[in-house]
View 1: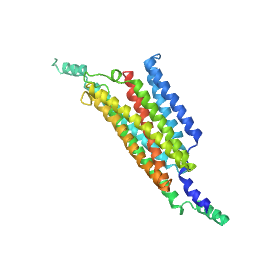
View 2: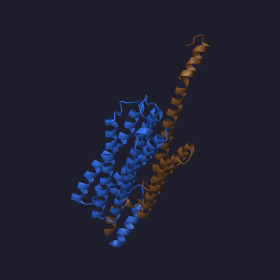
View 3: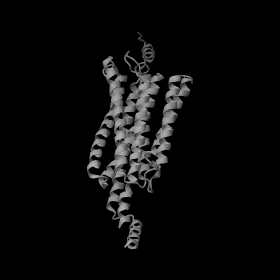
View 4: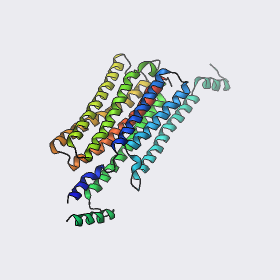
Length: 126
Length: 211
């Protein structure tokens, strides 16, 4: 009978991580955060490289926390959580990428030089 | 009796569909449902990030991110939130040993770190508003305040949730309901830390680079 009770109590935590897992996730996140910070304030690298590095650090920290803190990839089959996650990523990429794409085009199409050129072509001008 | 229960248990687990371990089944559903909520919250934040990305250069002659942000302060906030995410995980690990005191201690540490984070963020907001750089100043600052304070609001909700759980565990011990609540809360808290990574990188670090 004891076994049954302990099963019920242990059930919610059985899929969760270990102390080492949390510690590894914590230390890796710490390293990535602090190195991104110091690279930014030191200005020792070229700006483009820095932009790429910060993005890489952020995305790797995203996955580190998903793996070690949220235990996303430890799902038992069928992997419904992973399915929802992948769908979320698709929506986010469409939303953010689409917004940026449209808005930069909008800025381009309504920029001042463009307007002047358009007016000149129409025979007007400023 | 023990042998009988064991075989009974094994039979039960083989009949995954007809499981009558109701609590376990309910836990799986609650856990999955909460995970889906978190993913929709990601979509909400991605909308705010998109607005920020579009508006961040529209400063209307006002200050840019690199002149406004105090990166030292922001690093402190980041480390506070990251550590609180870790102690929240330790609280979940203590559940396994059903060590009520450890769970409460780690929960209290998580709460204090989260509260310190919120205090630092509010003092940053206060400083910005007092120097005439509120959300009315420019499109950049409007989108900045909406994005960062939405995250702060989530943190506030998490803090209230922690107080409620703390009192319940203190009074009723580690009941099945509080174990489930604590597990869901840990998902929520880790999720907020993940959102903060992107605020830290995109808003503050890219802001310092004048991107």
